[in-house]
Length: 245
Image (cartoon, rainbow, N blue to C red; front, top):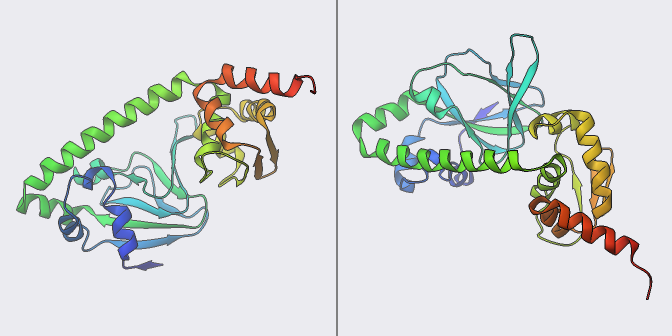
């Protein structure tokens, strides 16, 4: 089912990397023919190898991007949620989608036709300069994210992922996992058994996993753990084994 984007959608769209350097009026003109698409769980948005005729911004819900390897194995590249965008470069250069996009929950996604964006750029070349500058900054940020992820242990990756799902900085919070644990493991670059071990280790900092729900005693401890695993574990050990007064 498709509909016209709302004012709230426009606010989210204007914050994606390629539009961040543009004025709201310009963004509104560029996305004039855009449509909002409602997806059901497991519904495919586009497939690997399809012509890239549009790019997409997730308004709400979760959408996974994956490739099928020569061996037939599914490789998860990313899981996008609110504000996540994909295929800008491929659509604007007339290439093909290098991955498949599939909803893992009910999702609302805005589709922006590439041909209209290209016409806008030809009419006003300054748009392209602003888009390139914004995309370059975003690429630099992604490189930093990859370096950060590679420097983290499996426990830290899981701690940071859980903390990102909590809208509070500190204190107790019950988290509902947004999708299944196999996909969470793939998203974090872990094997399912490594994810299970990480959940077990997180019990030391007050994290209890019950199926798709996670009870966290203190989100602040999770954030501390993601930044410095050894210090957080040592602190939790001392607290749990200290003698009563």
